[in-house]
Amino acid sequence: MTADVREPLWRHALGDHLRRLRHRRGRTLHDVARRAGVSPQYLSEMERGVKEPSSEMIAAVAGALEVSLVDLTLGVAGELAAGTRGSAAAAQARQAFALAA
Image (cartoon, rainbow, N blue to C red; front, side, top):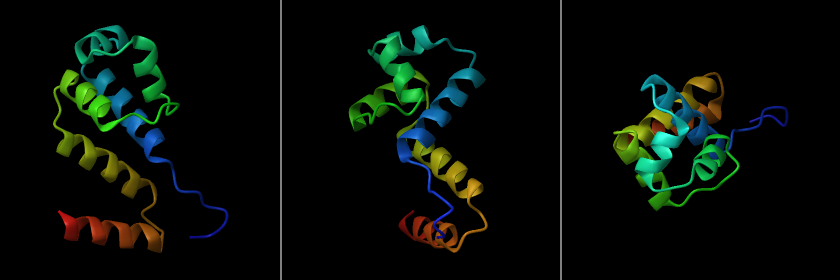
């Protein structure tokens, strides 16, 4: 990886993915937050990558969006891989991920 290219933080990639899922499902921030048992402000901070959510919070929001943790994780990983397809580090990460799966 070169000094010019910065890997995205997991919390940013997760937040972007959660927001896209919520929008695709036509759900409001307030509805998903209520179903997940978190405040709308906290969910907004998760979606913006401000919070580093616990696994329990991620599971609660995934459940509220009716997606499994496995599918959520694969979706985020796929988007990260697609964004860095050209780098050798991304190729190694995809290979390691495939072996772990």
